[in-house]
Image (cartoon, rainbow, N blue to C red; front, side, top):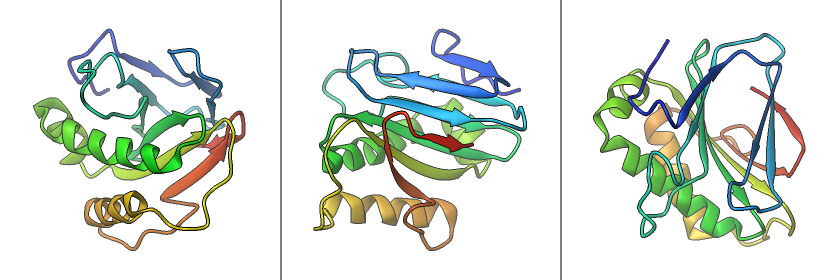
Amino acid sequence: MISLGYPECEKSRRDQTITLKDRTGGNSRYIGSNPGAKLIMQIEIDGCVINDQDKRKCDYLILNCDDNVSYFIELKGSNISDAYKQIAETYFELNKIAQFRTNVIDEHFKMMARVVLAKGNVPRIIPSSYRKLVKILEQVNGEKVKDGIHIKRIKSGQPEIL
């Protein structure tokens, strides 16, 4: 089992369902379905691992430790462009922290981005923040990014298999 040195921010579990809610009272919630009872580490990023109010960061990082997959999760009202920026900035910030770089990034966890929208539609115009996130994902994963797999926009409360 991995420990990243933030016991107050980490929670290891094998629950069948993992529900993440916005700590600040927003309406978005992420539901991860874990039918195989895989080892999942839930890490609260915003307000815990990264406590600096001046830094952009996503809300959670979920690590599927059995399959070496990381899910950067941003719970959002509707500003999808900002969500992409927050995920990208979180990756760069975590890369500066030795425990994350050694145990997640250097261990080649496949990186996935999840934006959970409480309301609003996905814009027809692709924002530059999306293209920047695609470049990061392609570099980290060493493969072409597939929209809907590597980057997924999810309606609040819509379950996803981890």
